[in-house]
Length: 402
Image (cartoon, rainbow, N blue to C red; front, side, top):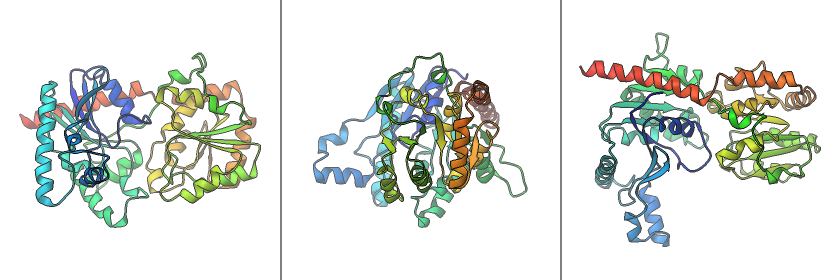
């Protein structure tokens, strides 16, 4: 693993919350270096709104900012509220200068002076030159232009920003082969040489049978079989399909665990969770996810097939398979790579039949085969691969500076 480096990662969400690939990668990189995770920066509308409602006071503009320890070797950073994003051009420019000055001052005090700068979404384009970077990384974990809630009028601008970030970066990491081709494909064929593939993975240890099973009180007493999903509950899921399955099989219990985004799917979600055999549970801490997944009878990856999901690398499929669970998944590329050990389905009838087959086909051999399928795909292995990419890119950058 790469050691002795400092990383500054611009996060799209607060560090505390459901663990995603960035948490897995950064927590491991922190074992050999310094990591600063910059939390989402406030917008001027949020600050003004908070002042108007009394949620914020003038003194709060200088509070709750700077570095805070999160893990050994990893700190979170909150930008000052007195220098928010947005506003008319003169205000935007002044706030950008103040925000950059505060960041440089705080990082220098912590001994971070020329880090590897890591940007994760087009919305962070303004931060690309905030710091003198030893290396510049752009991490593409989704097809951001395929987001359901991205207004059509904003898509051309996001596309321009993303292209500019790709040009800016020394290294571009894509989470799926489909993203590699869509974002890095060249007109004459092949792929942009600065692109590298880094799919999602799993930490298999919490999913092993010899690990003690922690409590999951919310699942006690529920009728089996338990058909489970863990992750963001949003429009990316085929909620109409789940509703149909729950209606056809009242003896099945569908369990959805995770944060909820109602945008574009509120009515469907309400209808689904109103069914007596459906349970919607809040997110659980990262260290407790395996306690729930290991109690499922079947793991579900019920995605709608969209521009977003065909470019994804479904994190939960790795975790279901590490637990040895039977899995039924939408027919998307990220699931198709494991077609030998899971069932793919594209209609309600196909989903129903696949679940019935998976429930009836439990065996020790099948459990072992699922675990073998994801055994090479660990987060530790991914960090070793990433370390190689970073070392290679650092060599290229040093050669170009010579």
